[in-house]
Amino acid sequence: MAIESVGKTTGKAPAVSVIIPNYNYARYLEARIESVLGQTFTDFELILLDDASTDGSAGILSRYKDNPHVSHICINTKNTGSPFRQWMKGISLARSEWVWVAEADDLATPDFLECCMSYIRKYENVVVCMAGSNYIDENGNVTTEKADYWKDDTRQTDHLYDGRFYVEHKLYWNNCIMNASGVLFNRECAMRLPQEAFIDMRYSGDWMFWFLMAMQGNVLEVRRALNYFRQHTAKVSEEGISTGKRLYEDIDVVAAMEKALMPHLGRYKRRLLHGMIYRRITKLKDSGKRDPLFAYIADRLGGGASDLRLFHLNQYLRYVCPFLPTMKRDRRKPGPCPNA
Image (cartoon, rainbow, N blue to C red):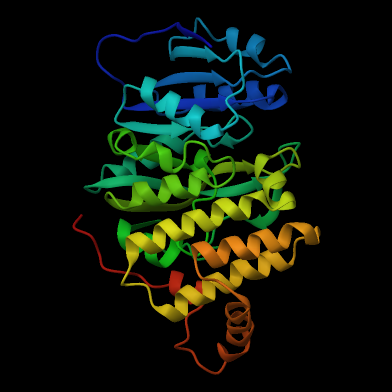
C-alpha cells in the first residue's frame, strides 16, 4: 500500500473531509472528482483512495496531486476485498468533523455540500444527514425510477428523527440509506463504531454502518435530490443479489438490530420481516443455495416457512385492517421530535 500526503494537512481542519474510494472505475473517476471539486461549498479536503485497480485509475488520481484540496492519495498494491476497509481507512485519515464518502461511480449537484451543511447547522446532535437521490444509468442519464423511499413525499424539505426511532421504523425494514454518496456523517461517531461488526462485509456493511451510526444521535433527511446514484451491472451489490451471498450479511444486520431494539420490536413485525427475507431466499434461481440460507435464517432469526405464510397473508389483510404493520405504514410514522 502506498500512502502519499500531497496537499495541505496542517493548520485549521476543514469542515468536511471528502473520501473517494475507487476500484476499477476509471471510466467514471474524472467526472466524479470534478463533481467534488466543483462544489459551491469549498471548505473541504479530498482524500483519494484506490484499492489496487487494474484499469489505469492510479494514473487518473495522480493528475490531482497538486490540487490544493487533495490531502492524500492512497493506492493499495493488494486489493482488500472489502469496500468498508477503504471507508475506514479514509475516515482515519480525515481531519474534519463531517465526512462524505463520495463513491467513485456516482455524481453530485454542485450545491450538495452547501445545502447539506446548511441543514446540519440548524440542529443539534446530528450524526447522519442523508440527501435525496436520482438514479442515473451507465452513461449518466437520469432515469425515471424514484431512488428514495419517500418517493414524491417532499412536502417538507428536511426531517429530523431520533436515531433509535429511525432504526426501528425505517432502517429495520431494509437499507433505506441506500447510497453513501448521498450522506454526510459525523467522523467522531464513526471512529467509535465496533469495526469488527462490518469491516469484513462485502455487501451489507453500509447497512450495519448506518444502523450503528444512527444509534448514537439524530438522523436528518434532506428531501432534495442532490445526489446521482449510478446503476450498472458491475456494482458489487448486483453480484451479491444474484449469488445470494448478500442475504447472509442482511440476516446478520437484522439480527444485530433486533438485539439492540428488543423488547420494543413487536413479534408480528419481526415475523413479517423474517417472512420478507424468506421470500427473497425462495426466489434464488440456484436451488442449491436455498437450503443453507433457510438453515442460516432459522439459526440467526428463527425465521421459517410460517413467517413466509404470514407475509403473504398480511399482503391481503392490510387492505381490510389498516392497523396491521407494513413497511410503508411503519415508515410514515413521524416519530418524536428530537430537541433541535
